[in-house]
Image (cartoon, rainbow, N blue to C red; front, side, top):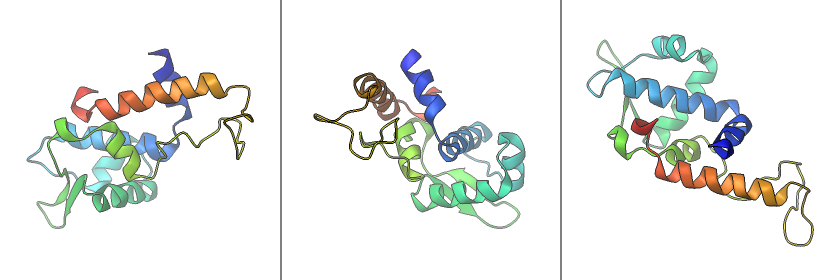
Length: 138
């Protein structure tokens, strides 16, 4: 679990917000939509930023959006089928090994940063968790 805590400290705000949003929509129940204003209040995500996140999640078909009095945002699939990895990919979070914690453009092979080996372990543990964990499990 230490690996996961370290990795969560590295998540960009967009990823954090997307996870908050998806879990809150799940908590609302599958039969009920929630509007953006209520969602912003419940998740503490600024409304302009929330719209950006919602757009990405709808575009990747993780959420459904309906206008009108019975409208709002709903999960597009059952929560037990939506993986954390799906959410992160929807907002453009890279799941590959390309990111160097030191910001080096080329980190690997013979030229790797001082944390390369340790960070690779952390990323691998996080990736495994994100691919195997659904939103109903968190």
